Amino acid sequence: MIALRALTKKFGDKVAVDDLTVDIPAGRVTGFLGPNGAGKSTTLRMIVGLDRPTSGTAHVNGRPYPALPHPLREVGALLDAKAVHPGRTAAKHLLAMARSNGIPARRVDEVLAAVGLTDVAGKRVGTFSLGMAQRLGIAGALLGDPPVLLFDEPVNGLDLDGVRWIRGLMRSLADEGRTVLVSSHLMSEMQLTAHRLVIIGRGRLLADAPVAEFIRDTTGETVHVRLPEPADVAELAARVVAAGGTVLRGGHDELVVAGIAVQRVGDLAHEIGARLHGLSATSRSLEEAYLELTENAVEYGVAAR
Ligand SMILES: Nc1ncnc2c1ncn2[C@@H]1O[C@H](COP(=O)(O)OP(=O)(O)OP(=O)(O)O)[C@@H](O)[C@H]1O
Image (cartoon, rainbow, N blue to C red; front, side, top):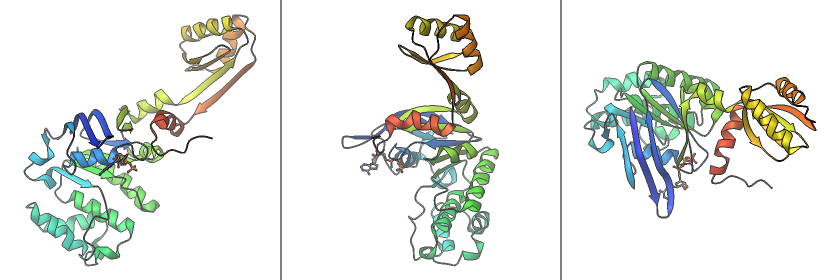
């Protein structure tokens, strides 16, 4: 399990991670989502001791990373797949990692097989495609058989087979009871891979929920009603709430509601004798809900118009 408490990282005036408090549980794949520049990589780097928090703590199994006696046996991480000596072979690279952490050499062959790189074990890493480098990075993360695994954008550069393989691997690692934290900026990918979502924007926590709960609470049909009489807007809003719906937005001459069918809203309007100038239903996809949640937090987003 990973525990972040008021975790904060500043680079000069720039607040990259802002007072982040969240628990990443064992036995689950947690999708760590956020737009570019949200602070995902910085958070992962603090968890594995590559960046020092400005304040707050990041604990792995109850201890900060620098206090772990055999770090690779406790946390495996794929952070930057290309951060490998290009002149070394895949096997030599893993062997060096194993030696420095007291891990038996036979683990090298095991993890190479697990990621499908046995045939290229003797090839120089500099000749690897991005997809092969990702697999090698994953082999490195698995080397110490750790209970906690971090993956920063692991599907980068992988073809569809590779992406499917990653999804299966993440799930099976979590099924074995491990803590699996996977970062991505794609909701569509996390919807397929993760059990839980932690969403950040501009370094701040925006959502922390099981995927199914997030979908239930943020997607579905919304009903837009236009009424010329403000008194009718208020009356209809009260009727909608009484009927179990939720008022998302109320204005002078419009109402946006959720959790209630469009036909029912029409009937309620009829019951109070309201004149309608418009009644329509739209459904919001998970991707739209995610974009809406993070739109105010996009750092390099293109301004609309
Ligand atoms: N070493 C650094 N020095 C200065 N600013 C940094 C440094 N590392 C990250 N930042 C800034 O901190 C913010 C968060 O960056 P980070 O890489 O953690 O975001 P991210 O969510 O991983 O984004 P991406 O999806 O683009 O990788 C960004 O504004 C980035 O420019």
